[in-house]
Image (cartoon, helix red, strand yellow):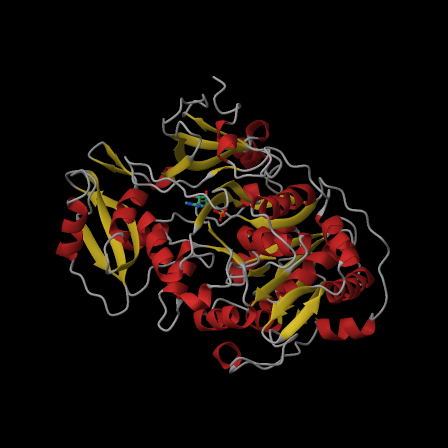
Length: 554
Ligand code: AMP
């Protein structure tokens, strides 16, 4: 069978989109250097009222690289970057590369146990860290000598801006933790100096990103310079990005969507990236009003939140040219509601940490179809230079329309997991990524995600895919967020339970929502019980945590 290798989806690409692209730069360091040289005065980062140009990023990262080198950091070493969406995140990546090393992107929500695991697993020797995270979490981990950290550089979220927005910074003061180097002082100390030139290789690790860990222990995905640079360019070329475009950074930068779809893209174009420390909806809305960004990509929960806020109007959204949402399923009803409120179409984009963000996306300007049987909104078509196959349990290709595991090969797929040869063999046999997602391709070449393999509910032998039930619930006018799980049931083995949060001011009863689902779906699928929660548990990347709901329901 050759149906997938013939890439039937290419005909769905937009006008001017080639089937293949040639990568402009072999590494992220080359990507940045070319932009800094070409457009030193272009704005790279907007942080409240602070502005950093490409030349600023270059000088600051030169200084940090020199400080790291002076403290024994060298070729192949790893710098942990443990921050929110602050300018220092980008400076940390650049400095790690300029000193011949790699960065480890660390979730700022991580607590001692998680941080200790990541630092030890990655063999991180230096840490760039928000001062408050140092005081509250990192200090103890480093003192316990469970890591190989020898150098810590701290900075404040107040740096690089002077507005001190009360909604985020009301209680914040600049700390100066003892035993750490201060990033601002480093900038002064090495002002005007350049580190020795480093030539990175495409196959070297640029960033270790730890997979969300929805199953098992977190694994360090080896996002190489080449795989990252390729998919930064995928964003640019897929969306026809221009230097007068600008990016609203709603996704956390440590996670793959923010890392590639915000940072990588801004460094490549080059263009401005608007960041706001952390996601505070009112602050983000004000940033949209102030900076008038043209593009963003983020999880659907972000868009539900922002568009549902009181006082937010179509005019607020009018600067946007391009909106993509990935990381979690989009219910068609939610995309429609967003369109109604904002006048903007949400393009679906799908990928994993292991694919450096997109393996699939809806071509710009096209409308993703909805599968008539499952009600799923298509996640798009495979992006440039990429082949995606649907496989059965034995690894054989399935025909068009049949449901199986999504398997992806392309220049954006990581070569493996850090120090985990067995996990690499299991998930990336022969270099093709077995995603753990179940889906299918239709006759035209659109792909649909049915669900995560492990989230399937088995109700009396019938397969129920939670996403399908959630999509129906989202169609109810009172429902804000929905998550569906299987719970043990004496008679059916497992049965369907939904957790729902309601829109502000809306009301609905359990019976009403059950009836609403029953009216549109097969009897074995509709939820037998519904629990209302104020808010559904989510990862910091916006994924609703079905796992956590499963744990609490037992
Ligand atoms: P992560 O590695 O944290 O980026 O998570 C990747 C997972 O997020 C995928 O395996 C999917 O299960 C899910 N995902 C990503 N994009 C989408 C999308 N557009 N629709 C549905 N699920 C998605």
